[in-house]
Every structure is written in structure tokens, then in C-alpha cells.
Length: 140
Image 1 (cartoon, rainbow, N blue to C red):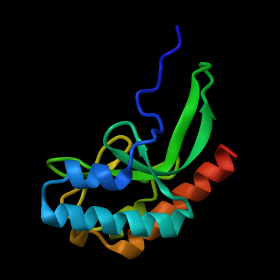
Image 2 (image 1 turned 45 degrees about the vertical axis):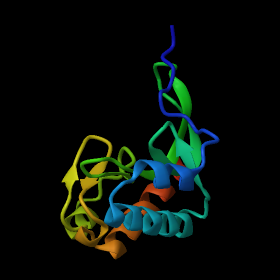
Image 3 (image 1 turned 90 degrees about the vertical axis):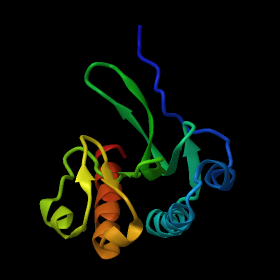
Image 4 (image 1 turned 90 degrees about the horizontal axis):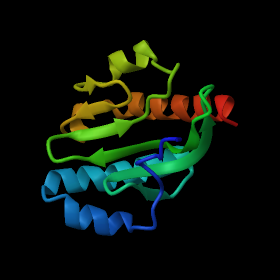
């Protein structure tokens, strides 16, 4: 039986999510700033993906195994402990940009950071746009 994607686009309000989920003033301000930046960089309106992820754009993927689905192109989640930033496409692990990004931890598929001021926004913009380009070229 094919696995069902846990993270799918929903009709939930992004602003309602921010106002109800994010209880830290700085994190709320950083979330609203990230929404504006990612909207500008991607050209897409923010949408909720699952209950806690804000995504921009979408694409369809299909693996050799036959598993397929839809995913956001870039996005983030203002988790309780830290932000999760989804701007790393497979094959787009640009070390030079990551070296310039600032204070963060890297997971398998995302970047974790505490506050937006810890990041170099120019490097984040380049990383986001490189991810968008990679996905458009490989998942057209």
C-alpha cells in the first residue's frame, strides 16, 4: 500500500496560525518577516502545509519506487524551540551559501535557527532562489 503524505496543503489561514500558535513576540515578528521575504523571493502566496508549516509554491514529485505526491517549494515552521526552514532541495546543498548563512544547525531536509537576526538574509535569499531553480529544473 502506498504511503500517504502527512504534509499536504490545507485551507487553514496562515495569519490565524501565526496568531494562535506563536506565543513569543520576537518569533511572531520573525515569522511575519519570513512570510514577506519568501513571498517576494518565490512569487507565491503563503499556504499552510499540514498543521504547522507555511509553504510557498508547490511541485509534483515521483520517485523511482513509484511513490509520488505534492510538496511545497520552500517554507518554514515557527516551532516552539526553534524555526525549521525548508530551503534545501536534494542536490542543492550549496556549501558556500551555507557557510555564509549565519548561526544555524542543519538537519537532513531543513535548517534550524533560533531567530531571524542569526541569519544572513542575502545568503538565505540566494539559497531560497537556488532551491526554487533546482526544483523547477528537476520537477518541471
